[in-house]
Image (cartoon, rainbow over all chains, first blue to last red; front, side):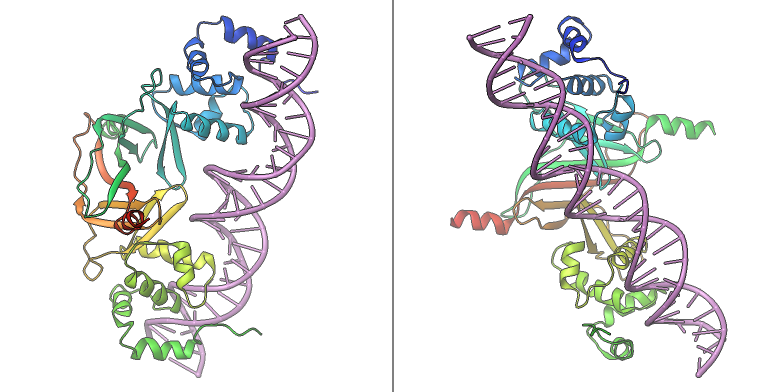
Length: 163
Length: 163
DNA sequence: AAATTTATGCAACATTGTTGCATTTACGGA
DNA sequence: TCCGTAAATGCAACAATGTTGCATAAATTT
C-alpha cells in the first residue's frame, strides 16, 4: 500500500470541525446542504485565497494531493451549478474559475468584464465594468453575456518598461 | 481505387479559370498571392455564401468531398492569419468562422458583438455594435476584445410565440 | 514539360472534458 | 458509536477539437 500525501478521513473529520482556517469554506458548503469532502474544501480554499481566477492546471498545482482529474472537473461543475464559483472561458482551451464574491448570500455575481493578459496569461476580474443590456435587432433577446478584453496587465507592462 | 466524389484536378483547373461563379473567391486568393486549390476555393465559397458564421462541422457538411480534417483546420487557420476570415470562439467547444466583410481591401473587419442563440446555436455578427476601448485600471492596456451575447434569436423567438 | 515550392493526407499525438461503473466516504438516525 | 444509505470518488474508456511530422500530390515558375 502506498503512502498517500493527504490526511486520512478521521483526521479530516476532526479538522473540518475544529480548525478555524477552513471554517468559512465549510460553512458555505453546509449552508447549501452540500457534502463536505476533502476535495471540495481544498478546492474552495484554493479559489478563496486566489487573487486571480484559476484554471484546472493552476488548481492541480496547488492541491496537496491531486485527486482524479474527473473529480476535479465534477466538483468545478458542481460549484458552478450551485453558484458558488463562476466559470470564465477565455478561449477554446483556457477556462478559469473564480469564487463568487457574493457566495455567502444567494445572489449571483453580476456579469462583468474579464481581462486576459497575453503575456502572463492571467485573468483579472473587473467588476467595475458590468455588462449592460445591448440594443439588439427586432426579435433578439439577451440572456447572458461575456466580455473579454485581451491585452497586457499592469504587472507585465511594468516589466516591459524596465527592460 | 475508389471513386472520389470531387472534380479531378484538370477539370478543376478549367473551372477556376472559366467559371464566373467562383471568380470573386479566386480573385481574393490570387490578389493575396495565395495558391488556388480546390479545398480553398470550396471553403471560401461556402463561407462567402453563408448567412451566419460556420463551425467546422457546418463546413464539412457542405463540402462536396470532405478533405482531411487536418487540411480543413490548416486552411481555416491560414485564412485567419491572412485576415480573409475571422474566428469566433463562443465557448470551449464551439468555434465559428466568417468571411471578413472587407476582404477585398487590406483593412481588417472591426471587432464587433457576436450573438449566440442558445436554441438553434447559430452565431450572428452584429457589426452595428463595435467594441469600444474600455477604461481599464492604471497600467492595463487593451489590445483586442471579444463580446458575446447569449440569448434567443429572432427566428427562434418567432417559433416560440407560435407554440 | 520539368523543376520547385507549397498543399494535402495519413498516422499519431495532445488537451480538455465526459460517462459508466465499482468502491469508498459522508452523514443522519438507531 | 456504529449502521445504512445516498452521494462522492477513482478508474478505465471514450469523445471532441485541434496539432505535428513526414511522405506524396498538386500548383506555380521557368
